[in-house]
Amino acid sequence: MGAILVQNTAWTNATRALDNLKVHGALSVEEIESLPDADLSDLIRPSGHYNQKTLKLKSFCSAIRRDSNGDIAQYLSQPAKKMRQALLDVWGIGEETADTIMLYAAKLPRFIVDTYTIRTLQRIGITPLQTTKQDLQTAIMKVLPHDPSYFAEAHALMIQHGKNTCRKTPNCKVCIMNSDCLSANTDSGIQSLRTVSDRVKTDYWG
Ligand code: SF4
Image 1 (cartoon, protein in one colour):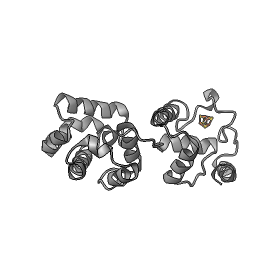
Image 2 (tube, helix red, strand yellow):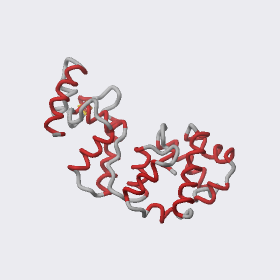
Image 3 (cartoon, rainbow, N blue to C red):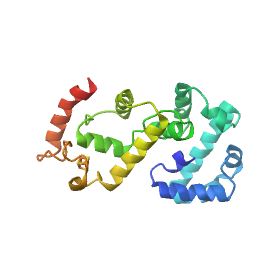
Image 4 (cartoon, protein in one colour):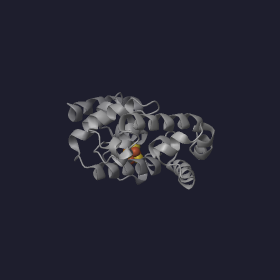
């Protein structure tokens, strides 16, 4: 539920919506399904986009009902490939949300590629500027240990770094990576970053 509620908002807002669901005993598939849309929207209002998110939660619960008779544990024990496709087939669940559910709920090793990760890795210069999320995920999963707790920690650290240091306007002076970062060491802006980034593409991406 949290993976859907956090879309386009901060985790603190998603938590407030989750707390409301908890207080009203509405955290199971049956309870979400039985709540009228208007009531569910009211409960998840703190997460923003609440009308859309109501439909997303309902469609996710319908999928769990259809695929696993409403049993979340059974749904989350599907083989990884099958589960990812099943998640992507649900209206309102994209790649990042699917990977978040697989990593945090199903405890499967998935590296989550979010906006913070892309921004930081592009600035450092190990990611080509034109890469897709899928290519980036594949490249990273080739070199990191396939351990769910490792990927969860990596995800949390990338978010923390993106929020605190490598922000829209990065605070390179205090960044522990500033001596190795292309962006921090490129005076002439994005054009030369693109050129250098394309060059490192060969080194890192083959
Ligand atoms: S040095 Fe600056 S641009 Fe590079 S990763 Fe750190 S904060 Fe981001």
